[in-house]
Length: 260
Ligand SMILES: [Zn+2]
Image 1: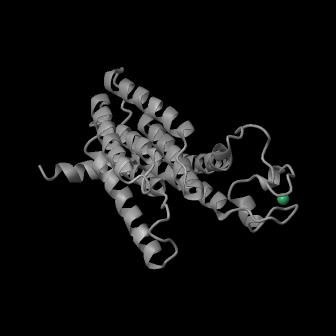
Image 2 (image 1 turned 180 degrees about the vertical axis):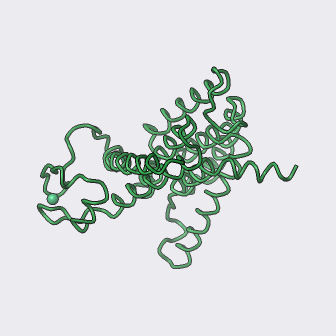
Image 3 (image 1 turned 135 degrees about the horizontal axis):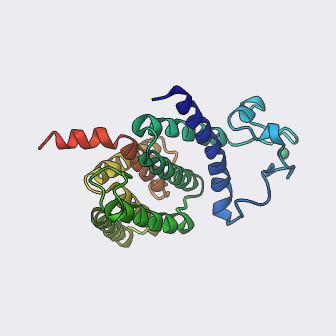
């Protein structure tokens, strides 16, 4: 692994993270991602170059707007940092390959889903629908295309479609039985997770997500921060599963195959 390239992709990741923050801020209220240019939500002042340097601006301004002093959410810093880290991990794992690009792309999609669900308890169709279409196209090219390695070898179009349909049907059942616990947004999200993971990786994606969600739900209930009736943003935890599973896919698949 070249150190220069690793540093380069960390910087690209941090810059992309800055754009993901714009998506997280604007997609729930259906605002344009392009206009207006970045501005402070409190005083509406347009941000200058110095206010827009990912990570550094936040640290330098200690998380406050330079003009009006309004707090900037810690999430802004967190998303930039995590995106940089995930780009590094994906590059370290796959090198300069198509699989690195695809993995980094899905990390971005799931990061946006994770934070919007955490902040708004919403999983937006405007993200899941196009993502499902893109996933099917990538799988089709991977399976029937000119032999470019995009994804782990077990990921085929049929495998993804079956995994996605199975999870969607299972979650649809939960939504019908317990509409207060899960929403259709969750069902569409797991369909996407099934598609891009494929069997057996999908088992690990879901196990990671469900376990994390369960642990946090128990903690929130035990500390009485949430009551039994409150909605817990499961999408946040379900979205973490495929990120970990995709980056560590080679290890997970080797470990799984060692049982046979
Ligand atoms: Zn301001």
